[in-house]
Length: 117
Image (tube, rainbow, N blue to C red; front, side):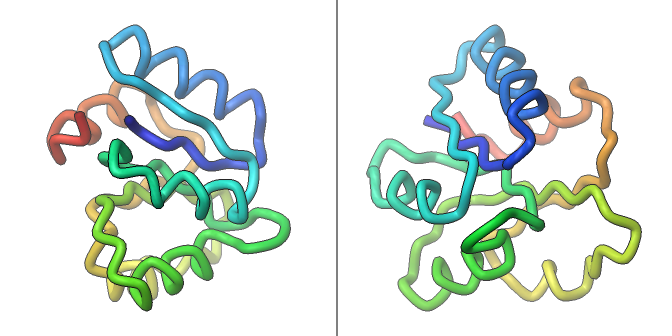
C-alpha cells in the first residue's frame, strides 16, 4: 500500500488515480494525524508526503517516524519556494524530493525506482 498525504484533495486524487492505474494499492490522508495512523499498517510500503499541512505537518511527521523507528520510504512534495531540501535530506526515510508542480510521470517513475510496491 502506498500512502498519499496532502491537504490538496485534487492533487491527492490525481496521484491516487495515477498509482492505482499503475497497479498500486493506494490510501489517502489529508492531514498528518490520519497519515500517522496509516503508517502503523504493516502493508504500508511507501508514502508521498506534502510538507505544509494543517495539524501535524510533513516535517513533524518525519520526526515522529524517526523517533519511533518507522522505516517507510518517503517521497516529499513541496509547493512553496522556500522549501529547505537540506532539512528534508536529514531524514533517512526521504528518498526523493519534488517541487510542485511536477510531472505525474516523474512521480510514478520515482515510486517505481524506490520499489514502493
